[in-house]
Length: 211
Image 1 (tube, rainbow, N blue to C red):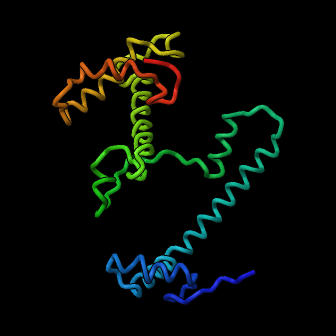
Image 2 (image 1 turned 90 degrees about the vertical axis):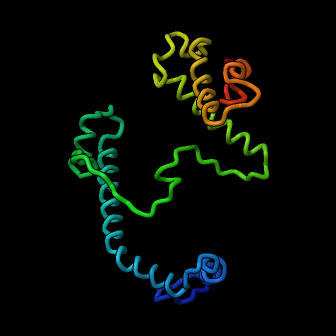
Image 3 (image 1 turned 135 degrees about the vertical axis):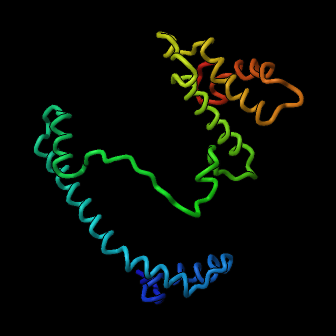
């Protein structure tokens, strides 16, 4: 068995391969001095390790109490109110506190201001990109159709199938938004929608039901 080699960085024992990668590949493109990076990391570990250890110990204690509660009631019907009381008693559940706001600085606009789906696919593979985009549109259609975001829910028993009337809004709403954001020079949304509705869910939602 080969023993991993370590090097000293600001008092930390770092694996040689990781240290070589940080020093030789990661940091040079950032302009951060390696000594400053390792000193900063060592400071974070020094400052927060005690608190992190306390939190891990608390987690272990809570998990042990929960496991013990379940073992003592093995085979018995679940009592939700009793279970909640136990969680509150051990401190796993705490009373809801007053409203508060978190003020952070230097956050990326993609996190704070720009709302949208995050697609992580290789742009060189068209099939992956199309599947990822379809999955996001399918989730949007499903959310609009299956909730009251655009009005009333489909009436039973249509909820188990596809309501042809109710299905128009979930597809028309996104199409209208796209038209307003980037108008099509060739085809208005009202003309494009029949093509979308006539396609099966399998092309956008992974279901055999049709619009």
